[in-house]
Amino acid sequence: MQRRIRRIERHQLPYYLKVFNRITDKPMGYIGNVSMDGLMLISELPMLVGARFELRLKIPAQDGQRFVDFAGTCQWCREDVNPGSYDSGFALVAPPAEYVEMVEALRHYFSFRSLAAST
Image (cartoon, rainbow, N blue to C red; front, side, top):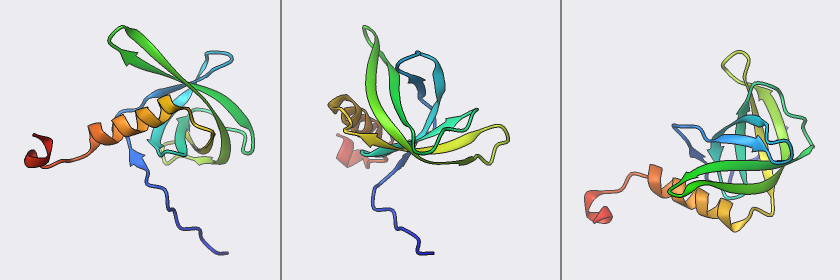
């Protein structure tokens, strides 16, 4: 079996953002990592591989809460190293500008920059 080499840079998140089902507003899990084209969801229940989900992030903002709505197709699902948790990989379907902005903001926030570069 030939192994695919990942060409998309992923960013691990030390704090998780909660992901909701956009239709039911029920929590689905937390983001484990993100890229411009996808994300890994950490959840208590396994996700259906091949299914398309309508997803929502609720981002804290100065004036309350901001929603980032997007669709994703579950590509894979496996049990997490922690019992009772599952990791699922999602490919995003035409990610909106708000999602792309969020990934860029997270990349900037969690990156290590030299003091000279940050002034």
